[in-house]
Length: 162
Image (cartoon, rainbow, N blue to C red; front, top):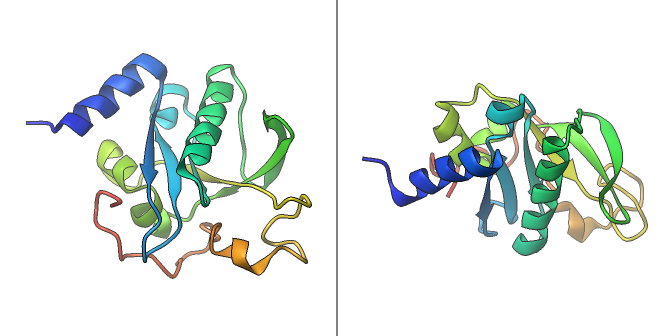
């Protein structure tokens, strides 16, 4: 019998095209939010964003979802303006080795890691991204590079992402 959460995920996807999962910061990694359903509904990669504030992350992921619903497509290794007013975001492909830690419940939904995913990376106050010179060291923990084959946290979260 499906859990209440399973039912809610499926209901949200049917009603809106995606569901957002929020995961609090823990000893494994930073807080993050991710979509489930963008791939199924619009053949678009799922999206994950990490950072210090779950409510902000939730709004950012929903803004990406709204753009996808309106027909906008996001691709790896490109920056995009206008997702959230005044914020330029860069998208990077997520390596499947990081799916369990950062997209765990999406793996349940899709029956494994056979779905594409993008990390939405946000800049610092000066517009620099984590790979740019001068990006503040403390913010690097907030945005681990999920495109690398093995993130230091890989394999330490449970199968449901929590």
